[in-house]
Image (cartoon, rainbow, N blue to C red; front, side):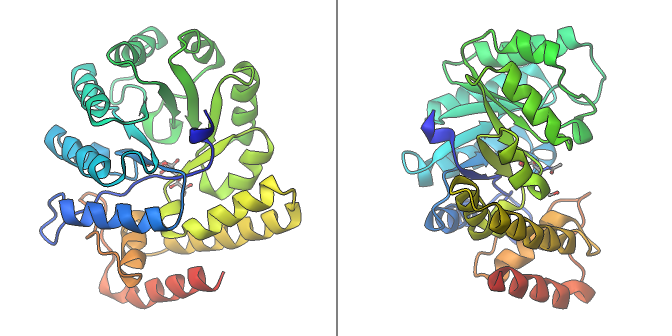
Length: 295
Ligand code: HMN
């Protein structure tokens, strides 16, 4: 279980200049994050633009990351897809590749009853021997995990955790209590990393960690050593950076990818309908990059 405790950047989609998934660029991002000494990676989630990739592209990304980092970092495969069938194909493939755990969002598009959500997650869990981390992200899926369904799911010993991306930090505290310390809780909102850890999250998985892993590693160190003033200060610095990343004409992920380019890691840009960064904003990207380096 210790291998799931620490900083887990949510891995970004890595494209070539034509917008195709790139093996070389995927591996360069792997190497970059490995050098930063993060604990592991969450591959193919929101930050991986999973929703804009077909099955073959998602499988390719899972494979390239495993080729680069299997046995070196803890690898979590996000396998949630529109149909149960596709989710299971991805789950079995991740198992074959040697991933350490699976994770999935609830069903999307149709607002299904909790019984269907339970069945969807359970069928994925039953399809492999791997542990499973529930992914709660109501702001994108439209479904907020209830304590009732959470309790039902954790009856299955393969369920080891929940990645909670809902905004109330209290949700983390509630899942932690309901899980009776057996279930790991991962903080989702990067803006509340320190608060999430203090209220009970064991670890964090986040979409902005990849842009500034050093800062989250430092925040984690301040939390574990009880330096709460410093933890709070670094969270403030992180939040200034996140707000800046979200303030450009273009998506946050596009801004992060431009920052990474300035650091020598070119993973292309984003897929539409996510918008790229437009030329007017490149000077702002440079300022953000400097801000990250100076923090
Ligand atoms: C993933 O699945 O790839 C991310 O870990 C999701 C993650 O919880 C992010 N939430 C959303 O994208 C809604 C956050 O890390 C988010 O990017 C961050 O808090 C900045 O707002």
